[in-house]
Length: 61
Image 1 (cartoon, rainbow, N blue to C red):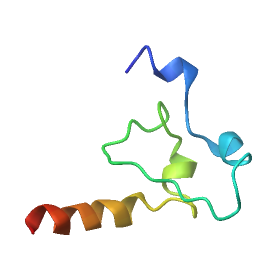
Image 2 (tube, rainbow, N blue to C red):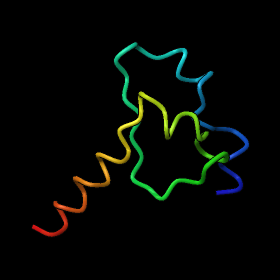
Image 3 (spheres, helix red, strand yellow):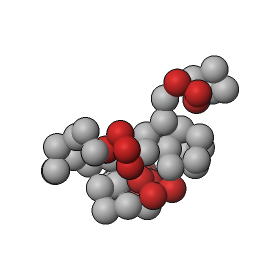
Image 4 (cartoon, helix red, strand yellow):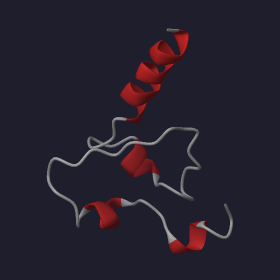
């Protein structure tokens, strides 16, 4: 992960280049402020918590 982090981070600046209806997804756990900033993972474009809940139900099935 340390080799990967300096070259890539999902942050608000990166999201400026995306479509208005983009959704941020992550399989969690996320390394906050390393691979993704807190303002992205907790922001309005993030669906990580819905994704995590859906994964829980899928794994139970």
